[in-house]
Length: 438
Image (tube, rainbow, N blue to C red; front, side, top):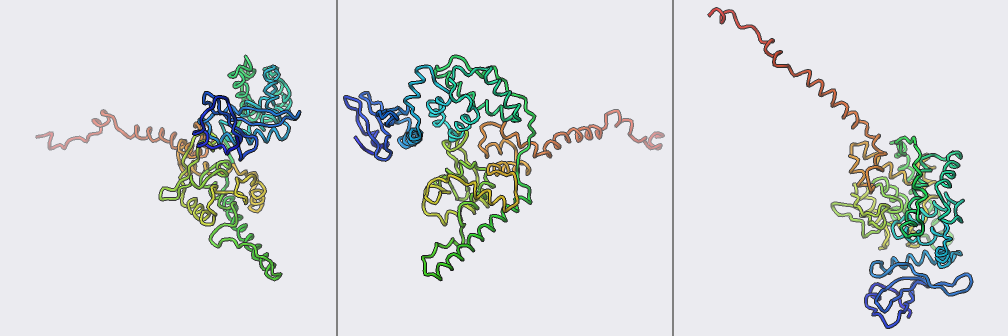
């Protein structure tokens, strides 16, 4: 049976006496299986390198997982198969007790991570790169002494203790999940304590001069693009060629300027910015953005209020957009894949060094703290799960610490200024002599 797998189809399709598959017409290889008991699960079909037809379950069921979410998971898995991976073979190896670290990352753990966080692919890539020497090592052979030796070698190579701690922190949940699934009996990192790290609470944010140069570079880039388009069309006109479309007079030449200005004024993560949809942009009197939990790093949705500049930028940008889903789409209408080239060129023109796109998030938070916004409000705006991450900005509010210790001085001054009862009696003036004589 071949049909586009939709929520309505799975909801209305009744079970039969035997299990049967529905092959999706939108994504080749994506299937939904309906059993006689009424369970509706998702999976894929593919041809192994040996030429054998394989079926593999995505471990997702309807209605807890929507068809669109399952289709995306299938798309990722089929892409991995296309470059030589075989999830069915990895599953077989696991049952034989030979599951390697990379096999676990490519298989069940990777699937689990993708269902939990938007940064799954980045985390998996980092683990593969950092722990590359253990790629083909069975999970059960990675023990505490092995990790201790790896850690010592990293420190000797000049890697910062904080970086090593973060790497091991990313590895811990891999083994925790293996224990939960009864693939291991003991956690090899249980006895590994974090290294002491002398990290100062310093974050990179723009000085007033740097921010001014960055904004000037954005404006010059806009004008340069417009001038180049005019020259190109003049050249085409002289040769009677089709003209290129003119840039909107009241709009932007492309996504870069509105995206940068929005980031500076909201602290939105790059991934959240790329995935931002117009349906989650509200430009009424209480202008705000909504970041859904599925797009947030913490998994929790949050509202970000828009100040006057951010609101004006989005209104101007929206006016020139074709009615699409994404706020900052690529030229093809899909999500942007890469902004590094335009960003590096902009920083070079602005003469700003050592400043990443993510540092605009630090800049946003730093400015808030420096004008007296409390850390918990900053935490909520940034979408941090707890206050610990936000505390890195605490040193930027020295006036708060000064205010705290200054209270001791004021209290002492007030204490010294209040006379005692005895002092009050002794300081009374003597009565007039006439009163005494009378």
